[in-house]
Length: 187
Image 1 (cartoon, rainbow, N blue to C red):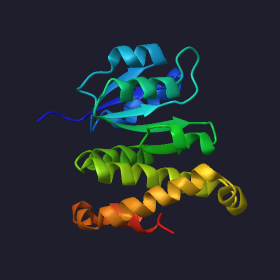
Image 2 (image 1 turned 135 degrees about the horizontal axis):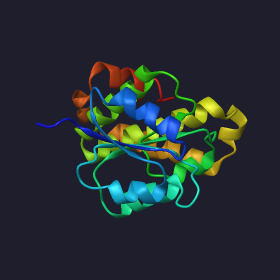
Image 3 (image 1 turned 30 degrees about the horizontal axis):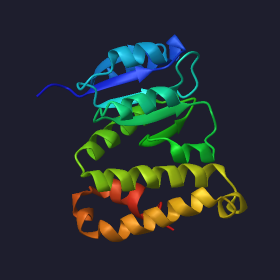
């Protein structure tokens, strides 16, 4: 079995190259310095994409939309200096990291988590992605901002319904995922 493949996409070559170097001992890594190059490199061999959100030309949001439209079965982490806002609710990513990501261990842990999630069924992947969005927003927004936002309230309802539907599937989760994604993010 070959090493999992990670596509690192960032319009700042120094950041892209640093992230690629951190991951290269554990994974096969491809690097793209803009959205167009990312889409050219995208194929079924890619397991995880680390995607900068704001890039000139084709943005990370547009790359993500195209990746999902083309049906690639990969996990996507947005890695961005853009503080997350409620617009993230519309994006099909799996997790969100706010730059700067200055520790190799944090990036490696994110990739490992996303690779584990790839083994889960679609419903569990959706639950974990939505829980990640909820956690990201809760870390960046005030309680009143959250309470006043209709789409956030809808996200909570979706999560509650998914929690009900996947109770049997929790046996698939390892202890780290149960702690980090399932119980701590549910409130």
